[in-house]
Length: 284
Image 1 (tube, helix red, strand yellow):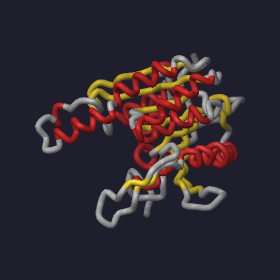
Image 2 (tube, rainbow, N blue to C red):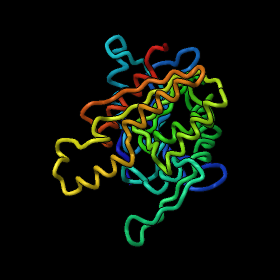
Image 3 (cartoon, rainbow, N blue to C red):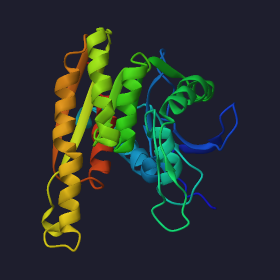
Image 4 (tube, one colour):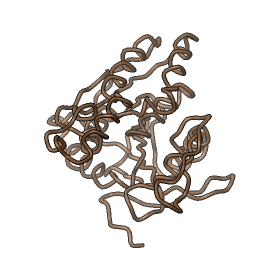
Protein backbone atom coordinates (compact mmCIF):
# COMPACT_ATOMS: atom_id res chain seq x y z
CA UNK A 1 0.00 0.00 0.00
CA UNK A 2 1.24 3.49 -0.85
CA UNK A 3 0.19 6.16 1.60
CA UNK A 4 -0.81 9.54 0.20
CA UNK A 5 1.27 12.39 1.54
CA UNK A 6 -0.51 14.51 4.13
CA UNK A 7 1.01 17.95 4.77
CA UNK A 8 3.31 18.18 7.79
CA UNK A 9 2.23 14.70 8.90
CA UNK A 10 4.38 11.69 9.79
CA UNK A 11 2.70 8.29 9.56
CA UNK A 12 3.93 5.32 11.58
CA UNK A 13 2.59 2.12 13.12
CA UNK A 14 2.83 1.23 16.80
CA UNK A 15 1.85 -2.09 18.37
CA UNK A 16 0.91 -2.52 22.03
CA UNK A 17 3.66 -3.77 24.32
CA UNK A 18 1.45 -6.69 25.35
CA UNK A 19 1.29 -7.89 21.75
CA UNK A 20 -1.37 -7.68 19.08
CA UNK A 21 -1.93 -5.76 15.85
CA UNK A 22 -0.63 -2.20 15.52
CA UNK A 23 -2.46 1.06 15.23
CA UNK A 24 -1.54 3.53 12.49
CA UNK A 25 -0.63 6.95 13.89
CA UNK A 26 -0.87 10.22 11.93
CA UNK A 27 1.32 12.80 13.71
CA UNK A 28 0.89 16.41 12.58
CA UNK A 29 3.64 18.81 13.67
CA UNK A 30 3.19 22.59 13.42
CA UNK A 31 5.90 24.77 11.93
CA UNK A 32 8.38 26.69 14.05
CA UNK A 33 9.66 26.18 17.55
CA UNK A 34 7.33 24.98 20.32
CA UNK A 35 6.33 27.34 23.12
CA UNK A 36 8.22 26.97 26.40
CA UNK A 37 5.51 24.73 27.88
CA UNK A 38 5.22 22.64 24.71
CA UNK A 39 2.53 22.47 22.05
CA UNK A 40 -1.13 21.82 22.89
CA UNK A 41 -2.19 18.49 21.38
CA UNK A 42 -5.39 16.96 19.99
CA UNK A 43 -5.79 13.20 19.82
CA UNK A 44 -8.50 12.09 17.40
CA UNK A 45 -9.95 8.73 16.36
CA UNK A 46 -10.82 7.36 12.89
CA UNK A 47 -7.70 9.00 11.53
CA UNK A 48 -7.75 7.08 8.23
CA UNK A 49 -10.95 8.94 7.40
CA UNK A 50 -10.01 12.47 8.46
CA UNK A 51 -6.23 12.93 8.82
CA UNK A 52 -6.00 14.92 5.59
CA UNK A 53 -8.95 17.10 6.58
CA UNK A 54 -7.42 17.75 9.99
CA UNK A 55 -4.06 18.77 8.52
CA UNK A 56 -5.66 21.12 6.01
CA UNK A 57 -7.85 22.78 8.65
CA UNK A 58 -4.83 23.38 10.86
CA UNK A 59 -2.37 24.63 8.23
CA UNK A 60 -4.91 27.00 6.67
CA UNK A 61 -6.51 28.42 9.80
CA UNK A 62 -3.69 28.49 12.36
CA UNK A 63 -1.72 30.75 10.04
CA UNK A 64 -4.39 33.43 10.66
CA UNK A 65 -5.21 33.15 14.39
CA UNK A 66 -6.89 36.55 14.66
CA UNK A 67 -9.28 35.58 11.89
CA UNK A 68 -9.97 32.01 12.99
CA UNK A 69 -9.36 31.74 16.74
CA UNK A 70 -7.03 28.78 16.15
CA UNK A 71 -3.42 28.60 17.33
CA UNK A 72 -0.80 26.09 16.18
CA UNK A 73 -0.76 22.69 17.86
CA UNK A 74 0.13 19.03 17.48
CA UNK A 75 -2.48 16.55 16.25
CA UNK A 76 -2.30 12.79 16.80
CA UNK A 77 -4.66 10.73 14.67
CA UNK A 78 -5.24 7.11 15.67
CA UNK A 79 -6.23 4.76 12.87
CA UNK A 80 -5.46 1.32 11.48
CA UNK A 81 -3.10 -0.11 8.84
CA UNK A 82 -5.85 -0.53 6.23
CA UNK A 83 -6.54 0.96 2.80
CA UNK A 84 -10.08 2.13 3.59
CA UNK A 85 -11.41 4.87 5.81
CA UNK A 86 -12.36 2.44 8.61
CA UNK A 87 -11.50 -0.95 10.06
CA UNK A 88 -14.98 -1.67 11.38
CA UNK A 89 -14.10 -4.86 13.25
CA UNK A 90 -11.14 -3.46 15.21
CA UNK A 91 -12.90 -0.13 15.67
CA UNK A 92 -15.92 -1.75 17.31
CA UNK A 93 -13.64 -3.56 19.78
CA UNK A 94 -11.42 -0.58 20.61
CA UNK A 95 -14.20 1.94 21.12
CA UNK A 96 -16.91 -0.20 22.70
CA UNK A 97 -17.13 0.07 26.50
CA UNK A 98 -17.16 -3.15 28.52
CA UNK A 99 -18.73 -5.55 29.21
CA UNK A 100 -19.29 -5.72 25.45
CA UNK A 101 -20.96 -8.27 23.23
CA UNK A 102 -20.36 -10.28 20.06
CA UNK A 103 -22.61 -9.66 17.08
CA UNK A 104 -23.10 -11.88 14.01
CA UNK A 105 -21.30 -10.99 10.77
CA UNK A 106 -22.97 -8.49 8.47
CA UNK A 107 -22.11 -10.63 5.43
CA UNK A 108 -21.99 -14.44 5.07
CA UNK A 109 -18.60 -15.66 6.18
CA UNK A 110 -17.64 -12.25 7.55
CA UNK A 111 -16.07 -11.76 10.98
CA UNK A 112 -18.07 -11.26 14.13
CA UNK A 113 -18.15 -7.71 15.48
CA UNK A 114 -16.95 -7.62 19.07
CA UNK A 115 -17.17 -4.76 21.55
CA UNK A 116 -15.77 -4.21 25.02
CA UNK A 117 -12.11 -3.29 24.52
CA UNK A 118 -12.36 0.41 25.37
CA UNK A 119 -10.45 0.15 28.66
CA UNK A 120 -7.49 -1.57 26.98
CA UNK A 121 -7.54 1.00 24.17
CA UNK A 122 -7.60 3.86 26.67
CA UNK A 123 -4.70 2.29 28.58
CA UNK A 124 -2.72 2.08 25.33
CA UNK A 125 -3.32 5.78 24.63
CA UNK A 126 -2.39 6.85 28.14
CA UNK A 127 0.51 4.53 28.90
CA UNK A 128 2.13 3.89 25.53
CA UNK A 129 1.02 6.35 22.85
CA UNK A 130 1.28 9.55 24.88
CA UNK A 131 4.89 8.80 25.98
CA UNK A 132 5.82 7.99 22.38
CA UNK A 133 4.38 11.30 21.15
CA UNK A 134 6.18 13.19 23.94
CA UNK A 135 9.42 11.53 22.82
CA UNK A 136 8.94 12.78 19.26
CA UNK A 137 7.64 16.32 19.86
CA UNK A 138 7.36 18.77 22.76
CA UNK A 139 3.77 18.80 24.04
CA UNK A 140 2.04 20.57 26.89
CA UNK A 141 0.61 17.84 29.17
CA UNK A 142 -1.85 20.34 30.62
CA UNK A 143 -3.44 21.08 27.22
CA UNK A 144 -4.42 17.74 25.76
CA UNK A 145 -7.73 17.10 23.99
CA UNK A 146 -9.46 14.08 22.44
CA UNK A 147 -12.07 13.81 19.68
CA UNK A 148 -14.23 10.88 18.65
CA UNK A 149 -17.23 10.52 16.34
CA UNK A 150 -20.11 8.04 16.64
CA UNK A 151 -18.59 4.95 18.28
CA UNK A 152 -15.59 7.21 18.90
CA UNK A 153 -17.86 9.75 20.58
CA UNK A 154 -19.06 7.00 22.90
CA UNK A 155 -15.44 6.13 23.63
CA UNK A 156 -14.66 9.75 24.54
CA UNK A 157 -17.50 9.76 27.08
CA UNK A 158 -16.36 6.43 28.49
CA UNK A 159 -12.78 7.72 28.79
CA UNK A 160 -14.01 10.84 30.58
CA UNK A 161 -15.83 8.74 33.15
CA UNK A 162 -12.92 6.32 33.56
CA UNK A 163 -9.98 8.75 33.61
CA UNK A 164 -11.28 12.31 33.98
CA UNK A 165 -7.77 13.75 34.37
CA UNK A 166 -6.46 12.22 31.13
CA UNK A 167 -7.46 15.20 28.98
CA UNK A 168 -8.34 18.84 29.55
CA UNK A 169 -10.80 19.04 26.64
CA UNK A 170 -13.13 16.33 25.42
CA UNK A 171 -15.02 16.37 22.10
CA UNK A 172 -17.79 13.81 21.62
CA UNK A 173 -19.42 14.05 18.20
CA UNK A 174 -22.67 12.18 17.48
CA UNK A 175 -21.95 9.70 20.29
CA UNK A 176 -23.58 6.26 20.16
CA UNK A 177 -25.13 6.79 23.59
CA UNK A 178 -27.87 4.28 22.76
CA UNK A 179 -25.36 1.45 22.37
CA UNK A 180 -26.01 -1.69 24.45
CA UNK A 181 -28.98 -0.32 26.30
CA UNK A 182 -27.50 3.16 26.81
CA UNK A 183 -25.14 1.82 29.45
CA UNK A 184 -23.06 5.01 29.24
CA UNK A 185 -26.01 6.92 30.77
CA UNK A 186 -25.99 4.74 33.88
CA UNK A 187 -22.21 5.10 34.05
CA UNK A 188 -22.50 8.89 33.84
CA UNK A 189 -25.14 9.00 36.55
CA UNK A 190 -22.98 6.87 38.84
CA UNK A 191 -20.00 9.15 38.12
CA UNK A 192 -22.05 12.22 39.02
CA UNK A 193 -23.31 10.57 42.20
CA UNK A 194 -19.72 9.97 43.34
CA UNK A 195 -19.04 13.71 43.09
CA UNK A 196 -15.71 13.19 41.35
CA UNK A 197 -14.17 16.64 40.74
CA UNK A 198 -13.00 17.48 37.23
CA UNK A 199 -11.18 20.37 35.65
CA UNK A 200 -11.96 20.43 31.97
CA UNK A 201 -14.30 21.31 29.15
CA UNK A 202 -16.53 19.03 27.11
CA UNK A 203 -17.98 19.70 23.67
CA UNK A 204 -20.86 17.52 22.46
CA UNK A 205 -22.11 17.84 18.89
CA UNK A 206 -24.93 16.39 16.78
CA UNK A 207 -26.25 17.03 13.29
CA UNK A 208 -29.80 17.95 12.28
CA UNK A 209 -30.34 14.87 10.11
CA UNK A 210 -29.16 12.36 12.68
CA UNK A 211 -32.69 12.10 14.05
CA UNK A 212 -34.84 12.97 11.07
CA UNK A 213 -34.68 12.42 7.33
CA UNK A 214 -32.61 14.70 5.16
CA UNK A 215 -34.51 16.01 2.13
CA UNK A 216 -32.69 13.61 -0.20
CA UNK A 217 -33.64 10.64 2.03
CA UNK A 218 -37.40 11.26 1.85
CA UNK A 219 -38.98 8.55 -0.26
CA UNK A 220 -35.77 6.51 -0.51
CA UNK A 221 -36.07 2.71 -0.45
CA UNK A 222 -34.65 2.56 3.08
CA UNK A 223 -36.82 5.36 4.49
CA UNK A 224 -38.76 3.18 6.98
CA UNK A 225 -35.62 1.40 8.17
CA UNK A 226 -33.85 4.72 8.62
CA UNK A 227 -36.76 6.21 10.59
CA UNK A 228 -36.77 3.16 12.87
CA UNK A 229 -33.05 3.62 13.42
CA UNK A 230 -33.60 7.26 14.38
CA UNK A 231 -36.22 6.19 16.89
CA UNK A 232 -33.81 3.71 18.47
CA UNK A 233 -30.69 5.88 18.56
CA UNK A 234 -32.16 9.37 19.18
CA UNK A 235 -28.68 10.80 18.67
CA UNK A 236 -29.70 14.46 18.83
CA UNK A 237 -31.79 14.10 21.97
CA UNK A 238 -29.31 11.81 23.71
CA UNK A 239 -26.37 14.08 22.95
CA UNK A 240 -28.15 17.17 24.25
CA UNK A 241 -29.31 15.34 27.37
CA UNK A 242 -25.78 14.08 28.05
CA UNK A 243 -24.50 17.67 27.93
CA UNK A 244 -27.19 18.67 30.45
CA UNK A 245 -26.31 15.70 32.63
CA UNK A 246 -22.57 16.44 32.63
CA UNK A 247 -23.26 20.00 33.75
CA UNK A 248 -23.76 18.50 37.22
CA UNK A 249 -20.13 17.31 37.39
CA UNK A 250 -18.09 19.68 39.62
CA UNK A 251 -15.51 21.60 37.60
CA UNK A 252 -16.70 20.30 34.21
CA UNK A 253 -17.97 22.78 31.63
CA UNK A 254 -20.02 21.06 28.90
CA UNK A 255 -21.20 22.74 25.70
CA UNK A 256 -23.71 21.36 23.18
CA UNK A 257 -23.66 22.34 19.50
CA UNK A 258 -26.44 21.48 17.04
CA UNK A 259 -25.26 21.47 13.43
CA UNK A 260 -28.00 22.24 10.88
CA UNK A 261 -28.02 20.39 7.58
CA UNK A 262 -25.66 17.56 8.58
CA UNK A 263 -26.20 13.80 8.54
CA UNK A 264 -24.37 11.23 10.66
CA UNK A 265 -21.56 11.03 8.10
CA UNK A 266 -21.45 14.59 6.73
CA UNK A 267 -21.19 15.95 10.27
CA UNK A 268 -17.63 14.60 10.62
CA UNK A 269 -15.65 17.32 8.78
CA UNK A 270 -17.76 20.02 10.44
CA UNK A 271 -17.02 18.47 13.83
CA UNK A 272 -13.31 18.28 13.04
CA UNK A 273 -13.25 22.00 12.31
CA UNK A 274 -15.03 22.85 15.56
CA UNK A 275 -12.91 20.38 17.53
CA UNK A 276 -9.69 22.01 16.32
CA UNK A 277 -11.00 25.42 17.37
CA UNK A 278 -12.08 23.96 20.72
CA UNK A 279 -8.69 22.30 21.30
CA UNK A 280 -6.45 25.09 20.04
CA UNK A 281 -8.52 28.19 20.69
CA UNK A 282 -8.08 30.56 23.62
CA UNK A 283 -8.57 29.02 27.04
CA UNK A 284 -11.72 30.15 28.86
